[in-house]
Length: 193
Image 1: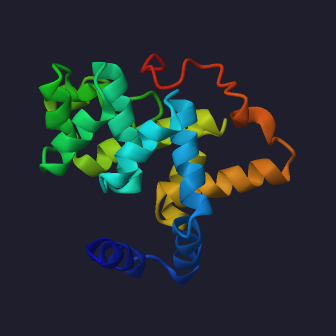
Image 2 (image 1 turned 30 degrees about the vertical axis):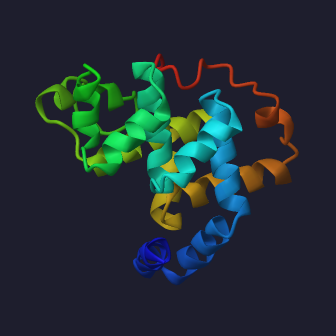
C-alpha cells in the first residue's frame, strides 16, 4: 500500500505524457526490462537483481547499489541495507573506504567541474543517482550521456528511459546486442573514468 502511494506521488510530479510512459514502465515489461539490463550490465544473475528489487529500493537507485557492491566486492544486499537505513550514497562510499568521487564519470555530474570537486564537496543523493544511471544507460544502450540526461528530463525516471531505449533498439533490428552480453566496455567495473 505504501509503495503504491509512493508511486502515485511520484507520478503526480510528471507531465501527463510522462505519467503515461511511467505507468507503462511500472506495469511490468518496462521495469522488468530495466532490471534485466541492470543484471546484464553488472553481470549478475537475475535472482540477485530480484533480491535487491524485493527490498523495496526505488528502481532508479538499484544501479547505484550494484555499482557500489561491485566496486566494494560485497553483496548488493549489504549496500541496499545501508541505504534503507537512511545512509547517504556519499556516506556509503565512505563506509567502503572510497571517496565520494567514485561516482564521478567522464561526461557525468558534476557537469563542467573538475574531477576532484566531489572529493571536497560530497555529492547529494540525486547527483549520485543521476551519475550512475547516465553512465550505465549510455554504455548499455550505446548512446551519448547527454541523450540519457535529456530523455530523463522528458520521461521522469530512468526505468522509463531504459524501456524507451530498449523499444527503439527492438524497432531498429538491434535486438541481439544486449541479450548476448556483448558489452565491449568492461561494464560495471568502474574503469571508464
